[in-house]
Image (tube, rainbow over the protein chains, first blue to last red):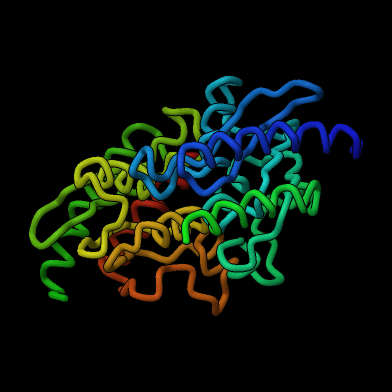
Length: 148
Length: 148
C-alpha cells in the first residue's frame, strides 16, 4: 500500500465521478487496478440506463471480470469515490477483491448503515478509508446543491 | 397475498432453478410478477457468464427494468427459491420492489447472516418466507451432493 499511488488512482476514480456529474448522475466513480495498471473504469449510470443497480462499482466489476476472463479478483484493488452501498459491498464480496479503497463515507446509503459491525467483504479483502475524502465529498455536495 | 398464487409462482421460480441445475450452476431461480403476469425470469449464471454477480435475482431485475422502462418496481413481486444474498438484497432495495417471496433460507450466504436485525430492503417491501421451502432446499442439497 503506497499512499502516493492511492491518491493517484483515486484521482482517476474522481475523473469517473466527474463524468457522472456531467451526465446528471449522482457523482460516484470507480477504477479497478492490478499493480500500476487500471484494468476497468465505471461511473454511476442509474439514470442513463434506467437501472438503479448501475452503480460505478458494479460497472467496473463487470468490466474487470470480462477483461480478465475471471470471476475472482484477488490481486486487484477497487478505488471508489464514495462508500459502497450494501449491493456493491455484496458484489465486492463475491469478487474476492484484494483491496477496497474508499473516498468519502455515505452515512445514508453506505453499507455500514445496515451492516454495523459485521464485515460484508471477503475476509481477505483489505479496506482503506478516507483517501481524498474532501474532494470526493465536495463533488457529492456540489451535485446535490445544484439539484435543489 | 394469495397463498395459492404464491405456490404457483414459486413453482415457476423453481423451473428457473432447475435450468441452472442442468447447466451446472448453483440452482437458484427467480421470477418477477405484476398481478398474474410474469414480467421477468432469471436463473443463476455465474459460471456461464464468468461473473460472480450474475445471480438469478439480478438477472430478473435487469430484465424487469428493461421490460417496464422503469427503475422502480413498487407494484411487482419477486419470487426467489433461495434467500437473497447481501448483494441481491441491496439490489432489491434500490428497485423499491413491492414484495419479496422467498423459498428456503441460506444461513451461509443469505443477507440475514450479515444484516442481523437490520432490514436491508426498502421499508415498503413486504417479505414472505418459506414458500415451497422443502422443494427449494431439496434442489440445493441435491446439487451440492452431486458435486462431492
